[in-house]
Length: 158
Image 1 (cartoon, rainbow, N blue to C red):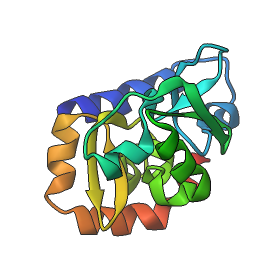
Image 2 (spheres, rainbow, N blue to C red):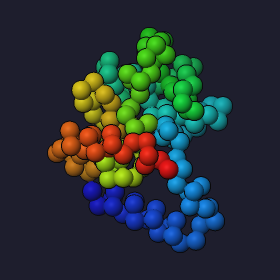
Image 3 (spheres, one colour):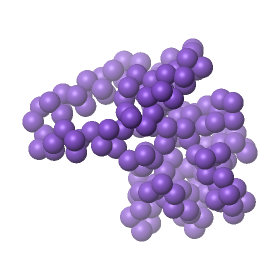
Image 4 (spheres, rainbow, N blue to C red):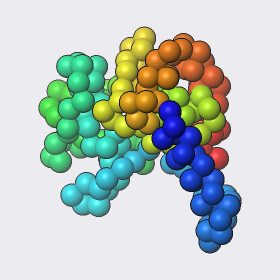
């Protein structure tokens, strides 16, 4: 939990500390959190992990550079052709909630990255958290944090 608070403090200090970006530029975030780069420089959703595998095999599974799909401005990777087909047919079913941003962070009003290795499926929906400490806190009241985050999403991106 301390890491999350320190991250927010550092981010706020950097913005207030004279970065050359305007407030509007610094605050606008894409609808899907993207990290890493694919082989052709594309931004990767879920850090390159297969969003469908969380639902089907119950574990974070790295996607293949050969099985990709562009959706909501990001590149999604998949471990199998079946998972790719399932995602194409119903991306909203498999994509992490809040675009892969941390579910607890959203409930607090911040759009910070979700770690693909810190995940939960609640009522058939995939949620990511910032780190293990934040996930432990979030797990204490998932329904409450989800309700609050649902109310704040996607306005917290602006």
